Image (tube, rainbow, N blue to C red; front, side, top):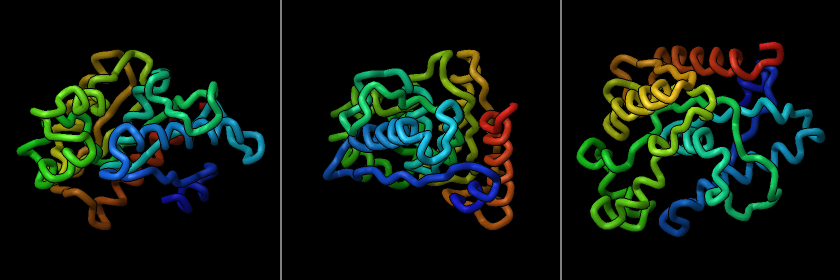
Length: 213
């Protein structure tokens, strides 16, 4: 994907972030925000337009991309990863089957009961506040950037409804948002499904990030 984006004229980077359970929420959020701040702080060096930064990811990465989109101006979530005072806001998001509401993941995901307590310090009964804080759905405001969700209807790990809820909430807030449905798609797409997903991703980025758009 990075090579494809670079071939389309983007400065494309991958972001590493700390993993649970050693580093629970919000460590991963702090890390991706630090990455955006670093890109913006080093924009001149790498010929980056600091006003046109997009985020995308799949699954956990999709969750973090959504989170970047809806919490661009929330000081308490910035962390201390360097370049303080530089904005971590992104101008465009493409979420590929990432979750939006962890409070509704249990019973709808084959591994939520195993994974989420490691990320959030307990299950939804024990740590409901953290489940809410970690869910992009509850941070949506009218200032959220244009957001595309791509999701398969047969996803057993992150329910298709998670993207429906996110897009509906964004639209209700007056934001630009769309849902690309991959009929029969699971948590991971086959070759034909990937072509559809990639085309939607590229079109969304081109629409909102390319100069002159």
